[in-house]
Image (tube, rainbow, N blue to C red; front, side, top):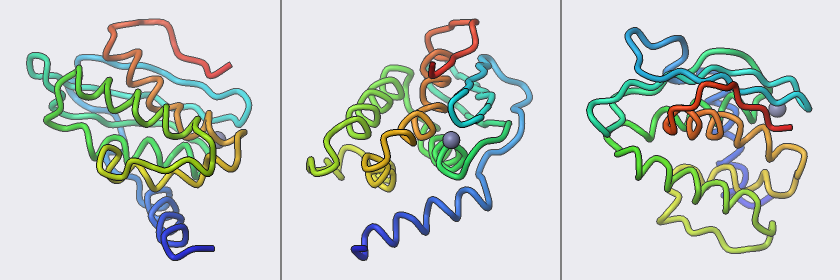
Length: 150
Ligand code: ZN
């Protein structure tokens, strides 16, 4: 395993052990549930907005290490982003994680999210890594139907 890969795994495990922004937001503006029946991951994403800027994001629920650490990391990078920027980040993350495992990763565009690039080698885990993002995206779009990866 490369040094970068080892470091990335460490970050994922650390977020799984000590998730950031864990627990409901009070007050919140948007809330969205997300399910990944394939793995049993189930999270609720809470978003607080100031105009069209993300003021805070949190999550609750349970899931595997990949889904939980992805939700945790996501909540740490969205504060201060506009809704459009947050959605663009989701698109970029989704494009990266569904790309060929050997495709280069645009580290500048992805920032910390690049730690999930290793997930590309495990297609079954892609839904785990993107679950919180799908729920976030639906919340930002103002949808009220829970999100399922199936
Ligand atoms: Zn999972």
